[in-house]
Image (cartoon, rainbow, N blue to C red; front, side, top):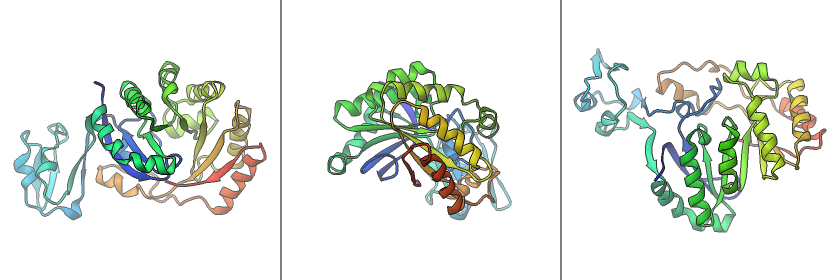
Length: 302
């Protein structure tokens, strides 16, 4: 049975598709968006979070580490990254949850056991299961088997994806997907490379193919000040989206600062620490431009 690396399963979600949903967060993403509010989703291996404010300095983690990767420097525990195998023994020994292992291997049956607990809520609200991340298509076999299991139980499925995968992968999973929440950052390829670390050529091609096959798609656009919130970027997005077969809705997702603290917990620097959310006037202008191309536009959040 297929297994995959999951870093969270969030129940009662209302932002990841219609109705009340259970969102399964896959670990690992081929893009490196500097504004990402789930930095723990980016690397395809387990990671350790450390919350210094919760640490009691009991040194239980030091005793639990079989690789002697943890040492003490003054009043602060220090981890030798070269020795640490991210096994999670230090997190298991921590009674205050100062340490947390992010990412665990799960079988499809394990995930479905969580998902099926909320079946009554799906039925009453028109909800279901959303695969998110990270990038769920980066773990293609696991995503495919999980989608099949959901459809076999009559559960509505959504996939939150940036489309960074071979078309063959999308072609295999699409029969089991009721809704694609398709992240589209910007149309300009050079700008896309600069801010995400990858070309958007295949991403846009995949979106066009999904649209030609008649799939239900919502375009999810993160709005980042100074990155993709200018009028020209909105016009190019409007032209592209309006040319797609079908009448796909667009949801604008304004940048927020909810993930800022996670970078410090992972020991990383957050380059957008001082960035503010886009002004209401800017969001209104972007919406106006997109509506001018005949698109249905809403402003949401997560």
